[in-house]
Every structure is written in C-alpha cells, then in structure tokens.
Image (cartoon, rainbow, N blue to C red):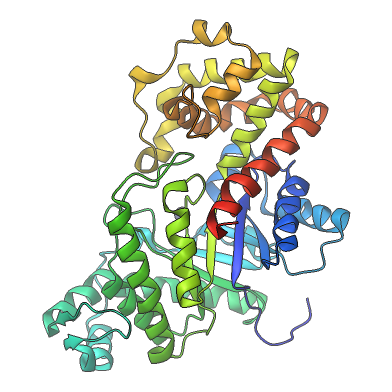
Length: 421
Ligand SMILES: [Zn+2]
C-alpha cells in the first residue's frame, strides 16, 4: 500500500462478516447496488479472533476472499479488512492482512489507572467541570471533580491499553496505514454520552487517532435478532453521542471523520430508521458491523434449495439443539434464547424448505418467524465448521440461491432500512 497520508475510513461503511468465506461477492454486490442509489458505501470485511478460532480459519483468508470479490466485480473504491475485537494476545496474526483494527478495551474497563495519569487527565479536563455544555444538546450536564475522577477510574486504564495496542500495530504497520477503531460494546453497562466524551479525551491524550468508536448502547443487541429496548431512549442517547463526538473532535483534535460504530448491528431493524435519520440530520457518518447474519442466510438458502441442502439445514439444527449449552456459552451476554420456544428436532424434520426458511428468516411480517430458533442457529456455526467440506461443498452447489439470500438480506433488509430508500 502506498503511504499517501492517513488512511481514512469513508463516511458510510458497512461491516460484513462471513464465517465460511464464500459470500464475499454477494456481499459486495449489495454494497455496489447501494452505490447505484447515489449512496457512497464502502465494505469492511470483519472477522474476530473468536470466529477464527471456532471455525479454524486465519486472518489472511479474509483478505484473500475480499480481494477476490473486489477483483471479480471490478470494485474500484476503498475496501477494508477489519481485525475485529483484537487485543495484545491475538493481534499478531492480523497485522499483515488487516488495515482496520478494532481494539477491544472492554476487559480493561474498571482497572485501576496510574495515579499520576489520573491527575494529568483531571488537569486537562478540569475546565469541563461545573456545567458541561455540549453544543447541540439541550440537557446541561453537571460535572464535579469527583465525577471526573470516577470517569478516570473507570476508563483511563482501558484507554491507555488501547494506546499500547495502537502503538504496537503502528510500529509494525506504519502509522497512517490503517484505520483505528476502539470498542467497548461487550460490557454490561452502557456508556453515556458524557463518558463517551471523556473516553475520547483520554484516547486523544494517549495519541490514539480513533476513527470509529463502538460504545455499548442502551438496550439489548442480541445476535441475529431485533433491538430490544426503548427506541425513544436509544434515539436520545444516539443523538447525544453524535453531538458528544462532534464536540470531542473539536476539543481534542481527533480525526474529522470520527464516527460511531454499531456492533451486533445486524437485524436491529427497529433502530435503523432512527440511526439513519439522525446521521442525516447532523451530516455524520456511521459504521455498522454485521457478521453472523450472512451465515444465517446460508442456512436459509440451503433449506430453500431442498434435497440434501434442506437435510443439512435440519442436521445443523438438530446438533445445535443437542449442544445448546456449549454453543451459547461464548455468546452468553449477547443472546437471549428461551429454550421452551425451540421446536423439537422431530418437528423440524417434517418441515419443507419453505417452512424452515420462514421460521428462520428475520421477516417481522411472517407469523412463523421464530427469533429463538434463529438465535440458536446463529451460534450454531461451529456445527457447520465441524462438518468441513460436507458443508462448504453444499455452499458451492447451491451458491446461486444462497447468494441471492445474502444479497437480499444486506441490501433490502439492512441498507435500504438504514438509508430510508
Ligand atoms: Zn463488538
């Protein structure tokens, strides 16, 4: 890559995950179709260490898949490969093939920071105590020195950790040759807009040129299903976050294009119009991260294909049902399955492809849609990974119908809802 200034992520970007690496073309087709509407959207292929470990793939395979899709379709705009949720222990394998790094600091929130760094932080931010006035936000925030101390105690160590990893990557890859995201979404308590403002202050203080930031938002972002929570509360928080970020850019000299990144962003249809209209209102960018939703489309496509495809889809469900506990464990904080609502395997065995697809597909108008069934399949990708070629050969055999599901899911259900087109 030529070093021509700092690599910048575009205003609108869409993170597409692809567990088995077969849907890059269909995903890129959805992005390209968006371009036909005059919306400049760029793709970011993301895959976390957790996914690589469960499936048995390497970070290099993501770049290869993305590169092949780009070449095949003649995509001449930017595209990125995201080392998703990395930390010090697993970043090495991602350095060469990735140009977007999601530095995950969730595990370091609440760890005790260095006392002298706390005083530096407080000194730099003391001017915001009293009434904190974030331009555009009507609500006035009252902030005492103690509040500032509390925020430092909660987040400063984690921000320093982000800087350590950022510098480690920059030393190896060259600063400016990658996009930096900081994530803290996989925690219990959401960060409020004031905390977000000071997290950005701390990141800037440590020299992290963050371009996308993924806070934990209010409400539940369960994998593969809709947003659960009060949409009005989310809307207010999202709007205040946008304004807090704008103010932080101005106050701390962070990258002009700094924007929110929404993790577990697939299927959160209830908040898509809200996010879409707020970014329009403030002329801000957004990054939406999705991953497992594409794997679910593979299973849907297999079911619709019938024959051996449908049989395999049923086998995946039956095995997922048996291994429910193991499969759910790594995702405990981001799924909510009611076992009583899971149909027994014998019942599913009698379904035709159309029924299987209707129960699985996230179509809010479809009375047969079952979010519990969907979530179990979502975490069940390990079953397919263990099947190896038996699974991937059917992905190839039925690539037409599967690709169509992947495309429609990203373009019709996600992108069009977000941009209101
Ligand atoms: Zn995340």
